[in-house]
Image 1 (cartoon, rainbow, N blue to C red):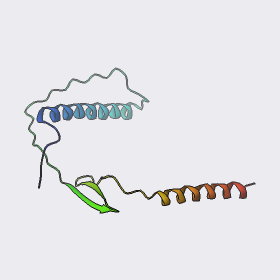
Image 2 (cartoon, rainbow, N blue to C red):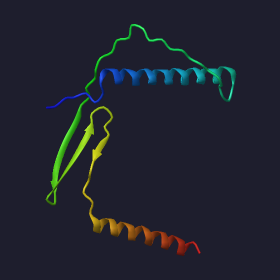
Image 3 (cartoon, rainbow, N blue to C red):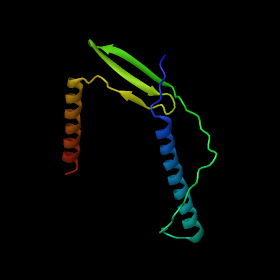
Image 4 (cartoon, helix red, strand yellow):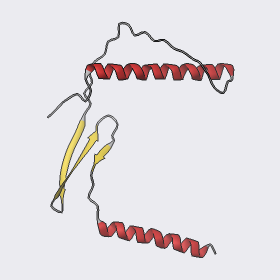
Length: 115
């Protein structure tokens, strides 16, 4: 089992403050547009002050696995929070070629039938 932080405390805090500022400004602009039936908001300046903020580091689960296919090892990862899967998959060249030929034939058939 391995755990490690992908961001340091200071970097994470700066990213979080930027995100909060952006969301605050976005929400205020949306409320102004809605309240005044406006198309856009210009020259909006927001000064944020962060006081007595507390936060905790968060370790999210990531599942890492690998499998062997035709004597090659493939690794994939699953983000436990978002469910996003990443990694490389084996590619079958004959299947890719057959798929491309099939698509070309279908397009040609559609074009021939639409004449």
